[in-house]
Length: 197
Image (cartoon, helix red, strand yellow):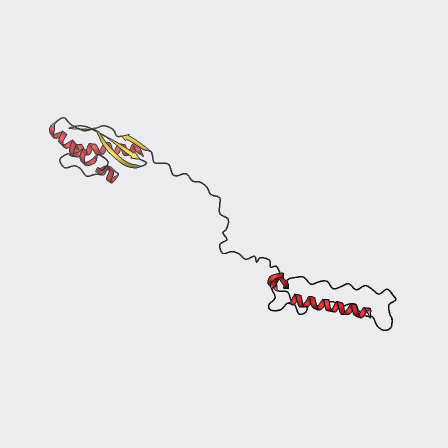
């Protein structure tokens, strides 16, 4: 009789635990996540165990066949290791490059070239390898006519916007009426360009 009472009590506790765990549709999720109460411990009878009539089992253990755990609540998922589309290969270490040095400005003077009207000498200014200015240091000025021709040659060839800077060479057209001065100017200019190289 005592064993029957204990079996019924254990069965009732197991059923109650199943109802609480399974829950009804209106039950809050907190009640569903509670752990099941452990089955009651049935003490062994004090007397000898009956034989021949089969063993009487203790309280049945509650089964959870009807309640399956929700995968989103109890199971923890390991993060998937997928290659990312934005993964970049390690880049080479950055090297700081200095800007190229500014081209140096220098002045080169050509030789004095003589002609029948006087001496001609030209000086060029270069920035890097580019001619940026030309100055006639010496031009014939003995007569008014040679002075006028020298001004024509100087105005056409010299300066930052003269033909020499535009063409970057001594290959310039001869000034009409000042052939000797033009030729001497180009000779001194070419010699200065050759020295600059």
